[in-house]
Each structure stands twice: as structure tokens, then as C-alpha cells.
Image (cartoon, rainbow, N blue to C red; front, top):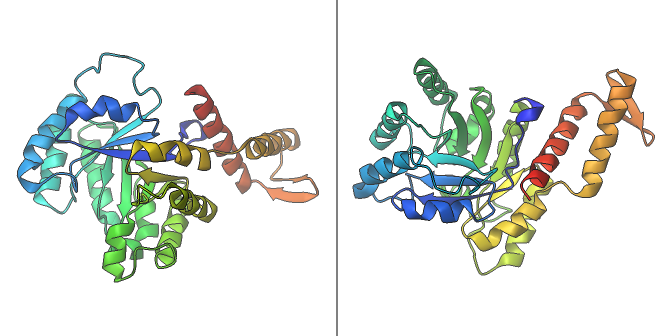
Length: 291
């Protein structure tokens, strides 16, 4: 991913593909990502209908050209190893206006991502990919999965399914190891990494505590289950003014030095840090442009 391609992914919200009337409302929530869901939110007997309605959304103008400006839009398809998942991919390929990005659930190996990448390339599609790590097998292979395709922009941590797979409690402490491995894998590939939504809608302070812990661990965003969670998430995962100012100083120092390392505030800074600084600046610029 190039520096200019960075985009805020502080928050996301799902909407069910069976209810296209919710799409404009979802785009107006303030979330950085709106994901139309064809998987968990859709009952088996509604899968085909949801698929048809979802693909139609990307072929139909919403009326207001400014609606959802700056919002990343994607579709969570069904597992690639399922019949519904294969049908979802067929619909994407057949669509004259395919979704710009797909979220892939229950990924367990790099091979399934590579296979989809090759298929999309064969059909001339530039569709981006976002991968959910939510199984024990996926966790074991997450570093290789993160490296498996240049189309991948972010990894998502699916805590609920992961807890069930690990026979662990769905708590911060119980899932800290799994979270850390996903962060490690995403960082190794230069990807954004998004934490699982906080499920207790009545406990906003608890959500903020968990979101801050996720940010400290290396996550770049967190999911939401309701629009009222989004403002806090956007604030917590945005670079603060001090971080932006420091990033600017580091970038300027490297530009002036034209070398692989600089000394700033009596601290040695090596060039690999520069990419993180560029990322901070680009995200701050994107955030400012959408406010």
C-alpha cells in the first residue's frame, strides 16, 4: 500500500444486505467503513434475495452525490468455502458495477485468498480485499494470510467466533494472545487492523476502555453495532494533534537529512519509522477533509 492510499479505518458498521433502504442511513452514520452483510445477518432462505439487492446497490445512484463522501464501502460475502460464498463471487464477477471491496469471513489459509485474487484478476476487477481472522486455523496462518495478496487492505479480528473456537471467554484478557497475533500479522504486511465490535450497547464507557486498549495494542480501528458508538471510536483511533505534529517533524527531518536515520529530540530514528509517520499524516489529512 502506498502512502497516498492510506485512508481512515477507525470505525465500521454493518448493515444487512436484505434491507437496501438502510444503506443511505448507514453511510450517514459517520463510520469510516460501511459493510453490507451477506453472511451472519442473513438467514439461509434469504441469501439469494440479499445478494441480488446488494449488487443492485452499487449500480444505483443514491441521489445525493455528497452522501457518504469519504466512506469506504464493501460487502461481507459468505465463506469462500461455502456454496453461498461461491455464488456471491459469481455475482460480483457478473455485475457491471461490482463492489469496490469484499470482506472475507472465516479465512483459514493464504491459498483461498490467492485463488480469489487470481480469479478477480482474470476478470479484470480491481476489487480490494479485507480478511477476517476468526478461526483457530486462520489464527495459525494469519501472518501468511496477510502476505498473500496485494489486494488486501485490512485484517479484522472476529472475537466472538474466535472465542468459541479457542474454547475461551469472550473477554479482553482471554483473547489478548489472539488479538496480538492478528496485530503482528497485519503490521508485518503494512495493513490496517480492525478490532471486533463491543457488544454491550448500554456500556459506552466500557467500550471506550476496550477501544483504547485495542489502540494501544496496535489496532487502527474497531467495529460498532450502533451509530451511537461511532463518535467515540473515531476520536479514540484518530491521531491526536501531538502525534500529527511529531510525524511532521520526523518527515521534515528525514527530508532535510536525506539519509537512513536522523536524531530528533536526542533520539535516534531509523527510516522504517518514516512510513508510520507518513501514515499518520495521511490519515489526519483524510479526516480533516471529511469534517
